[in-house]
Amino acid sequence: MSWLFATIYDPFMRGTEAACLAQWRADLLAQARGAVLEVGAGTGANLPFYPPGIDQLQLTEPDGNMLARLEGKMSASRLPHARAQKATADALPFENATFDTVVSTLVLCSVPDVARTLSEVRRVLRPGGRLLFLEHVAAEDRPARLAWQRRLEPFWARVSGNCHLTRRTGELIRQAGFAIEQETRESVRKALPIVRPSIRGVARR
Ligand SMILES: C[S@@+](CC[C@H](N)C(=O)[O-])C[C@H]1O[C@@H](n2cnc3c(N)ncnc32)[C@H](O)[C@@H]1O
Picture 1: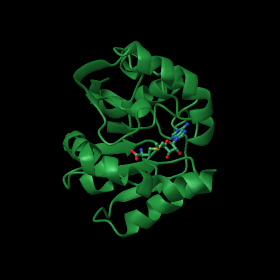
Picture 2: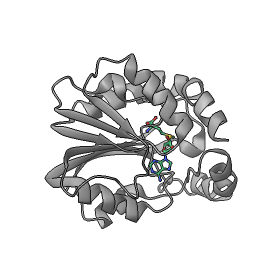
Picture 3: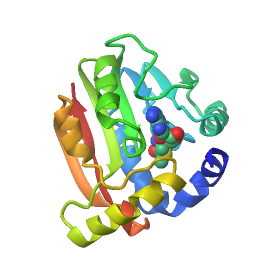
């Protein structure tokens, strides 16, 4: 499944990226500063959008097939200071207060324990550091869609790398002790209805 997921990820996402995601990534990542960590970097969809002025870019990804694609894109990118490492976001191999910015895009739906992951993100951020997030979430204001998300979630998680449909990620970020400074909720265009509700923004440690 891991090989298949890594192979089809970019072609499967192409229409959605063109419709909105690429622009959302660009707007979000323009706010990255200083030493930057990206968790669950996948095939490297964010690589084109990092601003040239950042001091350091550390990418992490637990899946070997995704990591291989990420490393391939890194070698063709204009980011000579970027490094990639195999790691899960719930046990980050970095000292406390190492980074100014942590980036998580479409990852908190898939981690086994969101609270633990956010606690790790908080630990490696410097005081005042920022989490830039873009995640698909539960359809809180559409009961019929939420019911479908609940029904399909067990199957969906099995076929899409443990991706959950009903997480209230904004609330979980707040509960982890972050102050959310920017928050946009918007429907992901050209995506399946169950993964359309999304949240993106900036949370400060
Ligand atoms: C839907 S993909 C998103 C990839 C990329 N972040 C993007 O925006 O296109 C989900 C990613 O989360 C990764 N992932 C799954 N569990 C994880 C964990 N516990 N820690 C970090 N990443 C994880 C997967 O391997 C996969 O690369």
